[in-house]
Figure 1 (cartoon, one colour):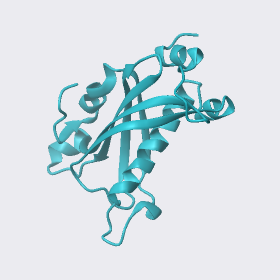
Figure 2 (cartoon, rainbow, N blue to C red):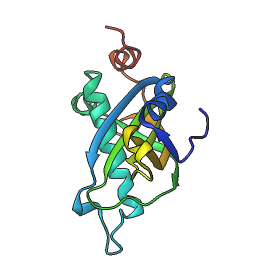
Figure 3 (tube, rainbow, N blue to C red):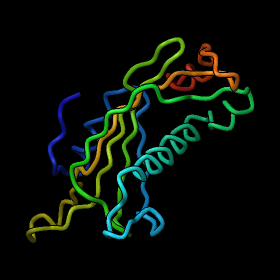
Figure 4 (cartoon, rainbow, N blue to C red):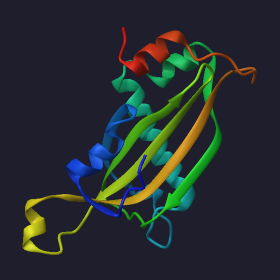
Length: 165
């Protein structure tokens, strides 16, 4: 995937991740409980936001995370790379773009981008809403049993990711 620039139109931002398998958008406002004394989202709390978006994505493909838990399975993060570009603050309107970047027999990798609605700097910009890239994360996850042993991803999960029935 190309390196996203810091400001894009909404359509261009959505196209940024739409070429990956399983592209999904989650919209929300930053809740007060995620903000620290400096009035910005604490760096570790961004992972809460990413998790909410992944759960939303899984519900959208009709394979909610509860399905993993019912099977005594878990997706555990084995690698994470996060770039913090611009601070998020309480009540910011954001979009989290979630995409699957690779899929193996036991593993799945996600790319997640957090955009916030940019303040218009001119009257021309007011007509075309823009999103500003604030944070991006690359996550590699492995499927494990509750016992901690790696295992295969459920076949119906893989089919759901691919849009198969």
